[in-house]
Image 1 (cartoon, rainbow, N blue to C red):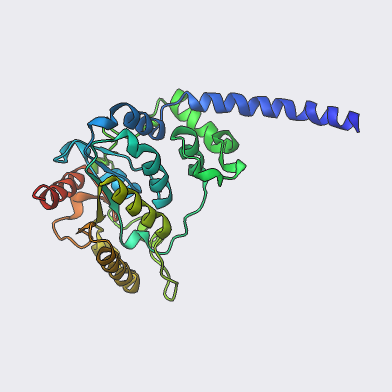
Image 2: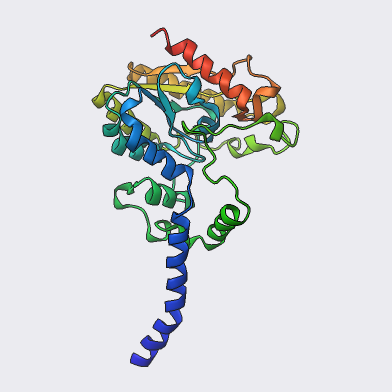
Length: 299
């Protein structure tokens, strides 16, 4: 038995050492998660508004064009679960915050929130502990060996910008980088439920917790349905679309402190404003942020 343990240890030692070195190397690479966390810690007292949510807000909310001192705390595939934990832990670093802007609408219907590879990024770089619920396999980035090596090569060999956001957290998508006509990738399929699928708001429980936390701190929740380029997509689930609007209507009735802004069908956004059918280009992001200014600046 001792011999078996000895050989097992000898076999595992190089693997463990490799993972440790990999983890240390990964932590030396700048990324949007650590950048945004550190920004709030250092500059949060100056902020009066933040946008937080998934990739639509990451690309669409241009902090530098907003009428209040603001920051974009969004990231790709960031759900209400991450939003809740980030707000719960970071609101004390933003004592002058007046409003938190969150996405809601077609894209937030019918997708279960679960722990994924990205959960480890929030855990490692933004100190999100998920109340101790995060499985060990999601706690360390080095466990995802293939993507970890790709990240290291991209940064050190190809010298790519891993952070992918400006100094105020916005991720600009330049129309010049769009390779295909809108609709080529059928990205909307990812957000569209099949006919007959059950309707529910992804992470509803966490959204309700967010509203409670904001009410307790005296911060105004601003829910926004961001625009889609419906013209290039012919598989819209209209039941899903109506369900989302009905849900939002009832939510606002139950929580009168909510400000709701519906830009989902706004016809001011056209082809050049989108990088794909659900994310705005740098031109569209400017329009989107200015529309928020029009709604909110007079309040």
